[in-house]
Structures are given as C-alpha cells and as structure tokens.
Image (tube, rainbow, N blue to C red):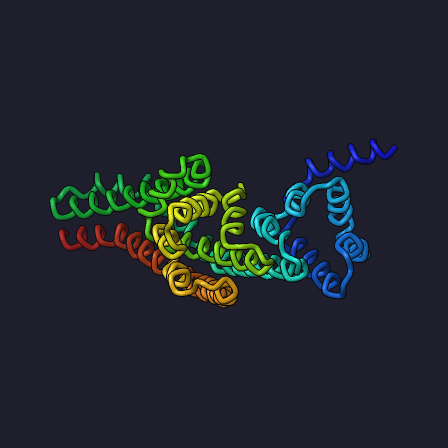
Length: 348
C-alpha cells in the first residue's frame, strides 16, 4: 500500500506544472514565520498544511525529504522556481533556514511585483501598437500601390517609394527582433560557455543586466556560505560544483585555480569581467573573513535595492517609449495618405 502511494506521489510530482509565484510566496511566508518560532522543518510543514492551498506542496516536500532528498532537490522535484532552487542549494548549509526562506520570499515578491507592473505598463501600448501594425499592413497592401499608379510625377513618386520603403523596413526590423529574441531564449542555454560569454559581452544592455544579477548572486551565495563558518576556498568549491548556474560555476573554478597558483583573492577575482567593480574591489580591500562576510552582506542589500530602483526606472520608461513609437507610426500613416493628396491638388 505504501509503495502504491509513493508511486502515485511520484506521478503527481512529475506531472505537476511549475508552481505559481503567488503560491511559492505564500508557502515561504508561512514556513519562515513558523520556523522562526523554533519548529523543525517537517513539523513546520504540518502546521503550514492547515491552509488547504499548501497541502499538496507540503505533502510532496515531506515525502521527498523523508526519502533522503536534499533541500534543493526536494524543492526542485516539487517544481519550485529554478531561482529558488539555486538559493536553497547554498542555503542548506546555513543554520538560519528561516532567514533563507525569507530571502526566497523577498526575491519572488520582487519578481512578481515588477512582472505585474511591466504587464500593466505594456497592456494598453501593445494593443495600440497591434492596431497600428494592422493599419500599416492595410496601407502597404492596398493604399500605397494605388497611389503609386495614380501619381506619376517624380516628386510624388520618390515620396511614395520612401514611405513604402519605410514601412517595409519597419516590418523587417520588427520580425528580426522578435526572431532574435526567440532564438536567444531557445538556444542560449545550449551555446558553449566561451561563446556565450562573448555574446553577452558584446550586447551592452544584456551585459549590464547580467552583470548586476550575477554580482548579486555571487555576493549573496558567498555571504551565506561564509557566515556558516566555511573557509573562502570551501565556499568557492561549493559554488564551483553547483550545476544550476554555469557562469557562476565557471567563475568559482577560475578563482580557485588562480588561488592554487599563488594569487591573492583580489587578483583571482579581477579577470571575472561580468562581476561588478564594487564586488571585485571589496575582495581587493578586505582580507579578513569575518569582515568580508559583513561587507558582503551590506553589498548584497545594496545590489538588491539597486535592482529595485533599476526595474522601477525601466517600467516608468516603457509607456513613454511605446507612445513615442506609436506617434511616429501614426504620423507616418497620415503622411502616406495625405501628402500625396496635397501634391495632387497642387498639380490641378
């Protein structure tokens, strides 16, 4: 009977879609609060299961942990966010499990909040943009060819051809950007690491965003591991052997190799070009592990606040940018229809 239940649980876990961010936030909020009262994890899950929404999650996690799965493996099998699973890989070495869960809750809340803000900011502009694109298609297919036949003077003809070319270029650029974004999302995880690093380094916007996220992850994980009493090399070794973030693992391996070659930690971390300057300077200036742990904690909060500020700025720019684009398209449509008519009236 127990075997049948276990197989049934495995089937449910395999078939379950990724948990919604809202459910994950609720889970971490409840569990971290219960753990802060001194309850062990399995007991905390039983208490959290008083909420019917959390019964499937707590049951599956309890089964996985009782089978001997590590914390990150259990959460991965229950289809928590990969970002959360990475944090728990390092957090399982931390004695403050409640603090680790609160950190996961905070990052998921940040992700959810700004995702919703982006959706709200894009909803109306995207509707207008779709309408304008359809109008462009109608003009390009039906109106412009008729105008090209109707007006044969050189002055009018070059204007019509220019408008037609502009519409074609706009369509080509839009299709290329969409295609490149899709290909990047689909194939970037499969690209060899040296090539992947070069691709990131060449695109300024992607490089800046990736550097900020990577620096935050490195800072947070190093601070978590050092605060448990692990040495610098032991912490780097754990970062190297994690498999969920290959650039982080690559940098950890590279730093360890340089340390074995006799370099200082500051010299070893300097060639890691995607790590921000504040982080590399910190390792140059601070050599005491206890002081380094405190500095990393401060830097972690700084990066988190900076990410929130940066996301807020980008969200605020979305609507004005789209409305400017829409205004340009509307003016172009107006020009494509009215200017030839005005020129035709002048010729009469």
